[in-house]
Image 1 (cartoon, helix red, strand yellow):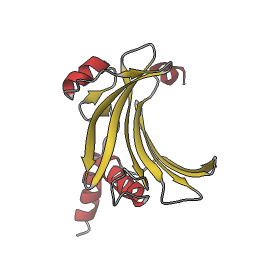
Image 2 (tube, rainbow, N blue to C red; image 1 turned 60 degrees about the horizontal axis):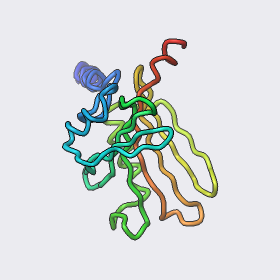
Image 3 (tube, one colour; image 1 turned 90 degrees about the horizontal axis):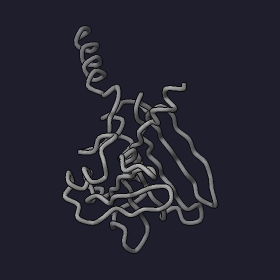
Length: 172
């Protein structure tokens, strides 16, 4: 038993990635058109002055239903971010969706990627915001819970996978 426990711990740690290069079928640097093909998306991406966003098919993780999108910073068409998000407490939210889904996703992310790098809690415009972040050499994953302070049954949960800026990484 003494030799088995260290082996099990070592196996669990070695199974967790030391870096990630995207999410699902999307890899950092892939174009929005390549992602459209990979996910059979027919709708064109939406653009604003900062980002071009491609809406992906919704994702089901266990009993959670999340909207998914991929983003490219303007003027590039290369994907640097994937966002999974859900709202709770709204008329069109899933009936059982709630702030507890943040903990469910945190547990699943810890199981897949290991311990998070940092956590934070803040307030902004009457909202309580909790974030948990995993930092990798080429990517970050940020899990966020936003709850209305005056109505804690209303809010959102999102997971954002982001590519680390290559130029910033080189400078540091």
